[in-house]
Length: 254
Ligand SMILES: Nc1ncnc2c1ncn2[C@@H]1O[C@H](COP(=O)(O)OP(=O)(O)OP(=O)(O)O)[C@@H](O)[C@H]1O
Image 1 (tube, rainbow, N blue to C red):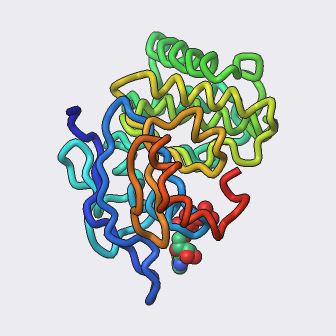
Image 2: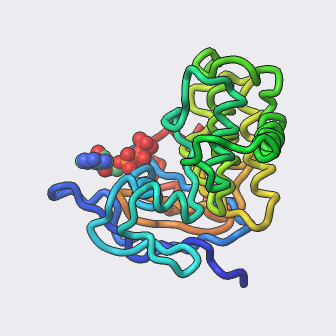
């Protein structure tokens, strides 16, 4: 059995009297893509927010490769190799697409604070940035200001920035939300490629069943903040407990 790269133990958060995530214990392993499903308000995003440090749990813990991340800030957690795709929060809108990726590569290389970069080093960083540009099919947009990208291309740029961080754990929260049908396959192909790298662990929150079917190695189901099912996609989706949960949410799992 492969050793878990990421674990949550009894992870819990309460907002006032409301327990949004309740004692979720789960291990995630390299080479595995886990899709987290559940009805609206089940606690999926809140669970993600505790793993990536946007929220501090009320109790329980998050551990990566034996390191306790529970009380760390979001940026410390990112430096420990947990990368989450965010909508444009780490983007410089006026800089070109390539420059944005190069800055992310530079930050990953530990040169983020250096004002002057030697030319040889700069060309190496640019070459790496160009690889991510190509992987995300944005090469023809390299010189455009990031702000000028259409929504679908901005989502691809988010993935490029995430790849440039070279995280061990990739977290995606509805990566194709709001995307047109012609752009979504590119992003899904990228995630599929990431999952083929067996050193990476991928966590995905997703409502769209075609996306879940295409990518999931494993599905976990949250309901009212609790983990109610965990396992092989076919088994989980056909289980009675999942059918019961979704019965009152017809149409949600399209
Ligand atoms: N900062 C907060 N303060 C108070 N309540 C919150 C906060 N964040 C989340 N909640 C509550 O926690 C519960 C879980 O919300 P969460 O957004 O994690 O669900 P979700 O499964 O991601 O839903 P969706 O699929 O609709 O995105 C909800 O009842 C929500 O109202």
